[in-house]
Image (cartoon, rainbow, N blue to C red; front, side, top):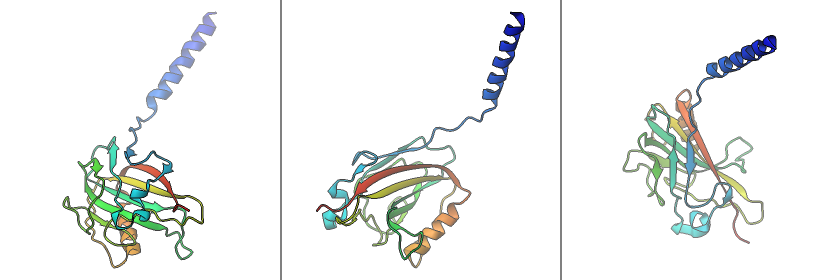
Length: 190
């Protein structure tokens, strides 16, 4: 009985020691919106169906990693490939969002540079472009990805959207402190 108790005590000590050596993982960032639930259909007012009245959804994030200097947000249609490449449809990219910011309001104004110093682009111009997948196909997955960075990206929009996106992602490498995602589904009504 004493040998069994000793063996159990050694086993418990080994288990506790193993857990004590595990690194403490930070709580992951969380991205949310009040516009629609994660993984559900995006309401028409946030899509190309609304035409010129389409607005960007409000976005909020929590659990920002310590040391965050800026954020980069991008929304893209992952169900589309452009010119037989890995390039997909960039509906919105906003970078240099100040590190103390934890929300973007609904209907972010159009313009290459926003009042807070951040910049934005899409394949259609300097602002949000809502989903527009055709009614003839399946629902497309529109992914909002938010990156917390330990630097500010001093990069203006390049000659093309593809060039700008590539430059932003290149500059981000080695500086990503955290990431969060949110998915909306959409295709045009029949």
